Length: 123
Image 1 (cartoon, rainbow, N blue to C red):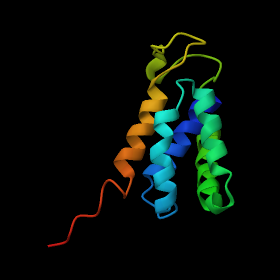
Image 2: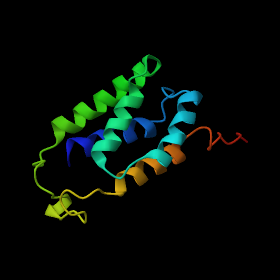
Image 3: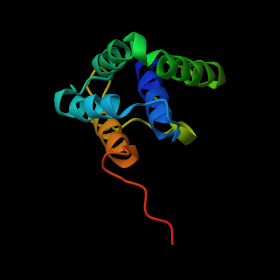
């Protein structure tokens, strides 16, 4: 995986961590991101990192950086090769954008947002 793909996956892990780091206002902004996301992993990664730079998102940024560090240090795959699990080839040709990451991010935001998924009442 490229460093950009790792960046996107680290951010998705932060979103899916079910922590209270992300405020309702931040969730509102996150819901607006997918409509503007390009297909290129490098551009998506840049948008994520720009979004995280706001001072009020410092804790989210720290969680993201921790996840990214763990992912980067545990990666034993040669990042210059397009090999996946079991040495499988990527369906995306080299130097071509993958629509997978903008869809993954969009789905993660929708699935984990407290704005769209209110807690169910206890019985």
